[in-house]
Length: 397
Image 1 (tube, rainbow, N blue to C red):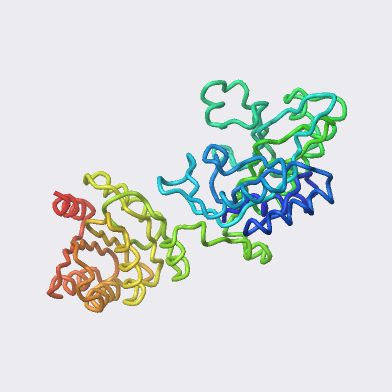
Image 2 (cartoon, rainbow, N blue to C red; image 1 turned 180 degrees about the vertical axis):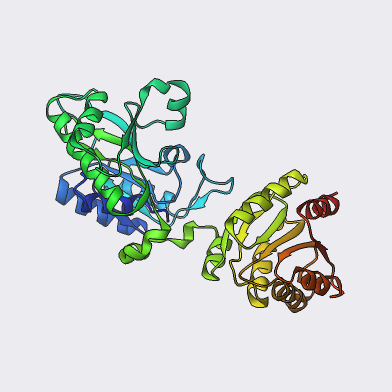
């Protein structure tokens, strides 16, 4: 589950991480009120107006701007709220901005300059350990830094048996070139950041930039946070943070129906039971010359109602030219799935206007094939993987 910047910062702050303070606003009037409140609380006279969408690169799309007066706060907020923000991480249509974060200006003048760093906490799937990835090149696209100057990217692996140890936090501060008070502040920042990541069951905490202010404070100026969906049962208070306006509406509908669905850019819809078989089916489609349009796992209960819901979700994608149903009948009998397919097809009437290829293997597979073949519907049955691939290739050509 992805969070907005202001939500991620709230979690960071609850674990003792210093953050750039801000107040979320739904319209220009609320933005002005938020700016006044921040001025009273922090003394800041300038404010940063940030679009709140689930995408990075907001500044490049005009979604992050500096306001030097309350009039500018109102003007900029009214411009950003409601806009279709296009960034390198959105589609060509962009994302509609529903709210902004009015934040304090932390780049205040002082005796020394500010520094920006990059820092993220995530799982290293190669080692099975959490790691902290960091760089002196904050405020930039980390992908560009990794490609052009990989020696400026550092990684700190964390033993799951011990967690992050103080000497590791000190090594991070040292590699970032800090000393004195800034060094001590960074050590505290890193320890608190990892604690927030660990205790919130996050799969990603990305702070870009981490700022060293002119008076040597260390704070999170941005926050990209992803919470592991499988751990939400331990964090009931996080569930309300979900913003379905930022999610693919088809994926939201599928989730509400209890289906595991991921939208992809292809032309062959998939309906499968089991994640492993779904991945193999997507490979099968690629080998047949097609492109998978989705990942859809209907689970172990593939009755007529569930199959019909899956059909309707797949058919909402106008790019789908064929549907491949690949079911292994272990927990659920193949003949029951076949009957569900036939019933769903009949219930939908003329809604299905594209070829359907069905491969059923396992318990009562022979009965299932007979049901499909004798249904009188425009459904092609297959027994072997290669046979299904050949039929997919034929309907695409």
